Image 1 (cartoon, rainbow, N blue to C red):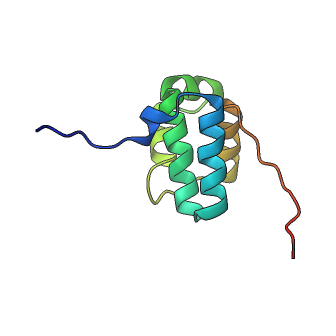
Image 2 (image 1 turned 120 degrees about the vertical axis):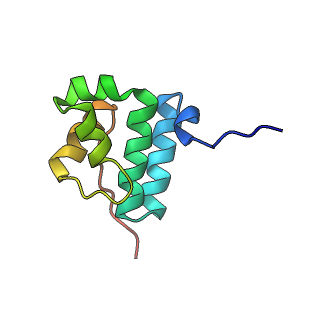
Length: 94
């Protein structure tokens, strides 16, 4: 039996699924996991498209969104805008 490696990007096929995935990681993940999740979303949408919309090169995007990367906040904001996302702050309950 042949198996293939699981790739979450294969399942991020709608805006709703992308939003649910990213919101879950934002609630439960650490900074590295959030960056990796944004990379999965960019891959699902297409790195070439994201590169064009952000003005960043594809290699720069792959490097910035790879596991263990520490991208600048401005890079994260550009990518979030390109994938149709935004950061929203809600008050927490005590």
